[in-house]
Image (cartoon, rainbow over all chains, first blue to last red; front, side, top):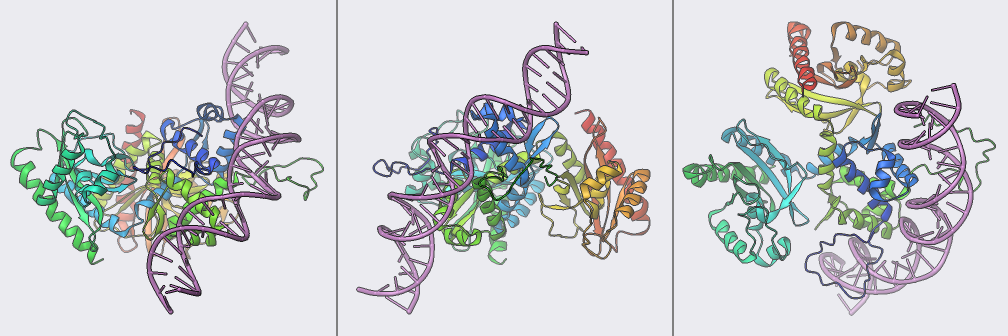
Length: 268
Length: 268
DNA sequence: TAAGCTGTTCCGAGTGAACGAACACGATCG
DNA sequence: CGATCGTGTTCGTTCACTCGGAACAGCTTA
């Protein structure tokens, strides 16, 4: 249990508390198994037990429990992830009606640009891909729906950050910005300066800061009360994302579409 | 799981701890909370505790554990389902490469028919919606991705059943077929007879047996080794699903597309 | 200021989760 | 054809840990 990624932001807890309980361990174990199956597609009881470092009987108990509720299924080759996760995942995806409206705009953007369009939200200080639509020319990437990327290294992420003040931004991105490509912004001050520009012109860009040879424009989606809902981006290969198209055509289209979206949300 | 031949001799219930296992209770509790949040969108600690009939501190412990791993998130109004479920759900959806190929065919069918097309798989004796694409004319339904319907009451479900022998079908659908609409097949023998027809012509139909005024055609998707992968259906309102279109056009298109799909899977 | 709600923390107590060994089953050996 | 390894399953025991209740804290309402 000791290996516990502590991602609490800047909170010098330290004293006293002494990590009370920390969490219900068997629940953590169950999700360890689920996440393991999410990467390995098929595993047997013994394999799971070895991978997690628990007794075979423990792995068996957990797998039985998960299977009984449809979170894993037995196949001839072993256990696989169950579709019940898909049900809950879709529930999370539609927990906010506005997300569904955002989806329509993502599809529209993908069709009109022939590129890839995505809708992301912020969660736990990270950007989460919620919707994606790929146009005919769109590039394939390995970023999965539900997966996460650093906010500071994507167009949509920076767009989202631009709706927070500097202090909140520092909280969200943390102290050190890990570089992902050669172009990743790694200085907080540089990021803050860039966000100021984003606020002025209304959209953010990403020039191969997360994926080599991939550029994107992203704009924040604002709720009627002023809070940010998420952000939408359009991305494509460097050789198509340049000149007039990258500097005005796509930004204009994006901002117009996001404006429509905000209106649709306001009157829904 | 019901068929649990418990032949332990002299099992005097009542004595302590007799009921071996049955599942890890705290894990079940955690998923109870997740499933609750899947329906209620936003709940506080107190509300969760009341709904599940547990102590407030217990609900708090569970929610904290889930939140620490991203399976729930704190919002100003309370806890909501976290996007980590979306990640695992997408992992389940792509656990089989063939599912992704099926998706392309579903999109193709939706575009060519302007109706709704779906791909389903069997899990725990139920049909699970894995992919859906709606054409411009498609009707909206409340059946969610990841959700389940009885196999015997949908076109795709019956298509899937047609790949099993009678005994296995009886196992899958159970003893009594609950009626959903006036047209639902409720007699097992009638179902088996219909499946025989399905085997002959290669596709199944659904005439408002699950949703009023909704008809569909469905065909099974067969793996190279002969086992069924799932099934694809095209569905639309009764007034468009009739005559030549319902009896030959759509079935032909569907069977041709499924044939393509099976070839794509075989050589992927 | 007090009362009501929320979420949080504390602590003790009884349960039940985890373990390890023994068991059953099938495949793959020799 | 018997032995051996692999799998998944079951069984008792024990101690860690989950649970529940009560006290605490933070915020809005009366």
